[in-house]
Image 1 (tube, rainbow, N blue to C red):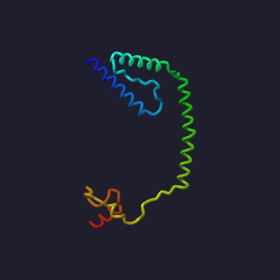
Image 2 (cartoon, helix red, strand yellow):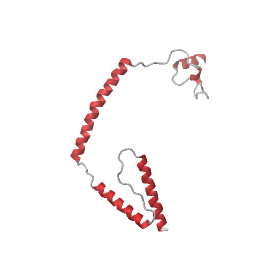
Image 3 (cartoon, rainbow, N blue to C red):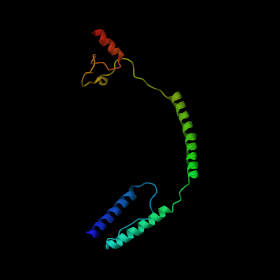
Image 4 (tube, rainbow, N blue to C red):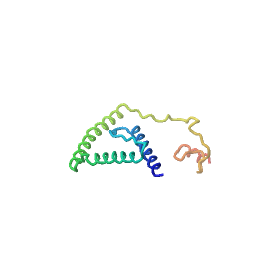
Length: 142
C-alpha cells in the first residue's frame, strides 16, 4: 500500500506541476521532474534530489536590502507621478474641449421607460420618488 500511495502522490505532483507549467505566464522553471514508475524507491529518491536542488537554488537568490528596495520604490513612484499627472491633465482637457455630455430630451418618455410590475409603495403609486412634476400632478388631481 505504501508503494502504491507513493506512486499515486508522485503522479499527482507531476500532473500538478505539468498543469502549472502550461498555465503559468512569466518566469518558468528550467528544471522539470518526471517520476520513474518502475521503482517507487528510485522515484522518491529522484524527487527528493530534485526538491533539494530547487530549494538550494531558491536560497541562493539575491535579495535586495532595504535601501535598494526604497530606491526602487522611489523610482517607480516618480515614474508614476510623471506619467499619471500629465495623462490626467490631458484627459481632462480633451473632455472639456471635445466631450459632449448628452442629456435626455425633454418631453414624455417612451413607453419602455415606464414598465412597472407593481405600483410604488407611497401615496402617488405611479410616480417615481424624485419625479417632482408627476408628484405635483398627482397631488393636484386629489
